[in-house]
Image (tube, rainbow, N blue to C red; front, side):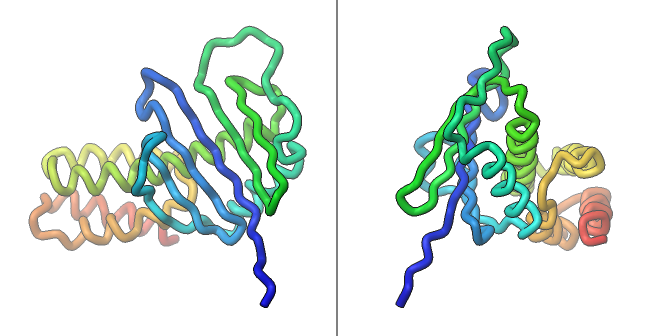
Length: 189
């Protein structure tokens, strides 16, 4: 029996004072992923990433020589968060950290992981609001719809289970149930 080792990409963003101030996405070549909300998070959210996004992420990693070269810009720019990218495949490993990079591939890969993070944050927040702030649900559904319309979410299909719960939940306001159905329709078309 041959054991196939899957390559993985891990993207971490640490930006004290922002919300959230830390998150990490670990992505396997087969699309399996985990979202960590803190450096010591022992219960990451597990989810699936589409083949298209996985290919895009790993292709960008390859264009960046699997993070074996520095990506930090020499320009003096404001601190916009420490980003760390790690690529691993078997015994091979590449890692790089930067605040700001002028390499378009690095910017594109960071933006891709930001969109993945936005989707997971939206799912987590919707679940929290469903439980603890039902009156705030409509406002957050509108924010989620705006993020969807602006293409700030990657694989919004990951929001479908929570939106389906809202769309049929009798304990939610009718307007929130309707808004969740609108979001579901947008995601599923």
